[in-house]
Amino acid sequence: MKRFLLLCLFMLTAFSILAQDIANIFDKITDPIFKEYCQRFDANGDGVLSPDEAATVAEMNILNDGYSPKLIITYNLDSVAKIKRAYIESLDGIEYFTNLTMLNCSGSNITSLDLSKNAKLTRLSCRENKITKLNLENNAVLTNLACGINRLDTLNLSNNTALTELDCCGNQLTELNLTNNTELSILICCFNNLKTLDISNNTRLVALDCSSNKLNSINLSNNTALKNLYCNRNLLRSLDLSNNSLLHYLYCYDNSKLSSIYMWRGFNFDKPQNSLRYIDKDPAAYFKLKP
Image (cartoon, rainbow, N blue to C red):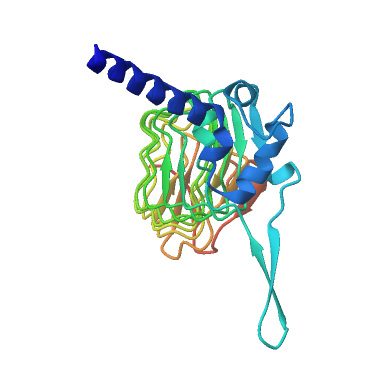
């Protein structure tokens, strides 16, 4: 009997601690600036962010909701002021906002972002941080992702099959697997270290910016809906656009070895500007009809 009572007491204590932890979400938010931002979700102003209050939060537009880096002023021995800005460095605690559909945390100092508990997320902007790890494996309904200007060397999007817009520009990516992202219509992957780019499954693409990489070829034969193409500053030797008759804007300059640009039948070779709204290419690259 005594052992049974001790077991019950232990279970009650454990449940009490668990309930207390869940009830006080502020205790799970480790970053003081992020915690200050989340004060707005404390609806009754009792200083506790409850699960019910967190459940009402559908959007966090941190960059545009009045958030600004904090100014920290310190003084040295000569009373000279030193001012620096303090940015959000962690979003620990974000996992408790399970009904979140939009998150904008751009322009901070975040190094790692795990959104595996935010399964309802459809739009994410985490640009201009210092992110090296981004976990989106459980975000199956994500449609818009902007994670440019970070420090990512890998990006796993295999489970993000609803993705329609992707901006991963300005990272350290050496490969980008988009095989499962068949809904993608806008892809911005410029300023990376990509040597290859397979977009054969991305037949809905209308805009592609793969400039400033290390591509020596790119196959656009399946991308018949393409209207805007930026492939400048690569290592291209030839460019086959024979299946891309809907193209409006073409930027392929600074490809020093590019000599042939194969165009579709019906292209106006005498007046290319009549077939394309804007062209920017090297003088040594000539429009040709594919043999």
